[in-house]
Length: 333
Image (tube, rainbow, N blue to C red; front, side, top):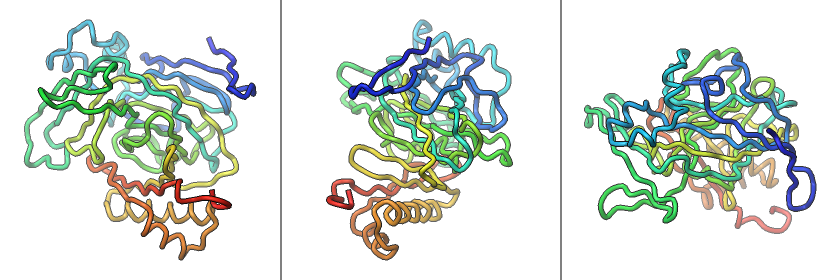
């Protein structure tokens, strides 16, 4: 049942909901403006969302996961869901946010992210990955996750600090695009695989249809930028999100804000074009929010912003341009 919450200042923080994955509350492998919502909320509300690992129960067991550690919801979905694809991801949602209209921006505050299972996997499939021609056979490795120590045990003598995040967070695309695969990221967000979108960050997505229709999945315990073999440390996650409809913003592509940086994201099948989109979006941010001239913004991006490849393997490439908050002070802050 939803519950009213108060934030530390005493003001209402909206209603809190829980959304668990089931055959009726997920979409398998697509974003679509025409699907019915799994949950309706208002701007300011918070939702605890459970997302499922992108793998079949059988494949997990064959790779060494004990049957009792395979989530029952994953088994149910594989048994009952028949409408699936063209993408592989099991996405919890969609969530309809009252008052969100095309042209608005959906602000998604990622309040917390927690492990749902004590393992992850990394797997390469034929024809996938950045070096697919050099690695033609399927491989899968189960990676134990030590939540207490905060590390993933990749191999003997190799422990990776965990930075859990959701690889896919998106809204419905424009109605004219129809049902689109969950694999390539685009103007709706989706499978951006940006490892910096951890707990404590904010994602901004342009709204294309009424209600926004937010979906989330593709949980990762951690990842390197680029996700070069086609997968990260794939796992199931629980996340707490607050959704705020912003009618005072207008953006064309996803943006984000971490405690330390402002981030603009560019997505395109051509890596150079993705970088150009990210840079132009960052310049627009600096002009509109920090009140620089376009020439000043371009110069500042050159001396202070970092461009990173976030996505190489899912059709559209991804680049984000990050600029530190710490350089702004006084009236620029």
